[in-house]
Amino acid sequence: MTFTAWLLLMAVLVLDTVSHLLLKSASIRADQRSDSQTEFLSALAVDSRFWVAILCFVALLVTWVGFISLVPLSQGVMAGSITIVGVMIGGRIAFGEAITPPRLLAVGLISLGVLIVGVFAA
Image (cartoon, rainbow, N blue to C red; front, side, top):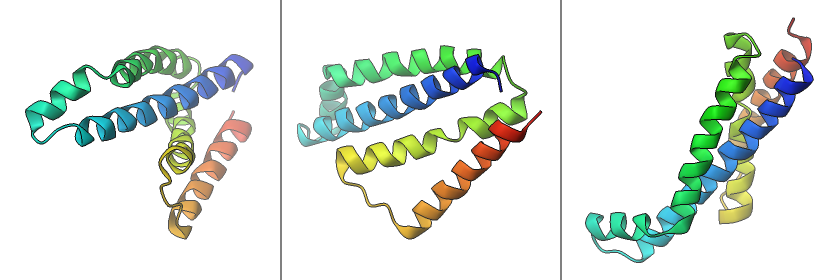
């Protein structure tokens, strides 16, 4: 992969992680403030974290298209799966989610696959 492709992949990683964590945070907050689905959606609609998450998803879409235009599709999709690592680590830091041995093994295998594809692919 080119240097530009690597930069875009890192931007995809950051935007994907941030957008998911913000969306989860906004959802938790809205859930604590509501007793019904209507109240939940109303609380979510006025939470700034929800709207920042939406903006991050839009930026992610643009960044992903830029990244995928620079690399072969099979390589891009494989490399893009690294975002699961960022979301898992972010979930641990922000929400205290457990990192179990099977999850750690899965993330390790994904990371190894991304490294192999990113470094050794033609």
